[in-house]
Image (cartoon, rainbow, N blue to C red; front, side, top):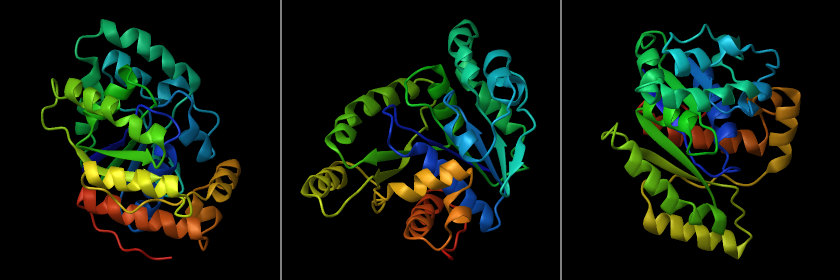
Length: 255
């Protein structure tokens, strides 16, 4: 089992869509995949059509009481540990639990024979839930919008990594994935050049095509289910191939 967290303390980078759609494509290729939603906004959860999750089904008992991972939901060939808004309460409780940031890593160790891949959707913050996800993973995947805001967030990411290395010296960024890219804009091309000049490894950029993402989220389906023949689905399959290489798992790009 290999665990990756889609991590960026800035919002709007594409963490949720990559977690969900890469997870779906990996599962469709035959891997056993578990998704974990750590964001109290629960966008990953609702995008998969789950709107009735109870707090004990989330990582709340894991994060606050070091309990075992809850029984996941089964959706679209995936297993999902969902989220809900009151998961945010864990942020207030975890500081009083010694070693709480490592509770999820321990819980995942107990299910390592059940899954090939675990993908974690991190909240856009540097709080305790973000640390829980980052420190549970073997490797981080960092989506970066090809915007000044995205590039300007990178020093903050480096500082966060220095803090995490105090508990997990082996934690590393396995892939930087540029997102929201529009090759017609000179600004985007310039930001992509900066990303490639200063970071490694960098995947091919994920184009900005918002309509299908919004519509598939509204339908409660992965893009590969909602619009399997669309350019967005092909974009995501190519991104999944890069993510699979990062994880060291087999994946063949097929429409």
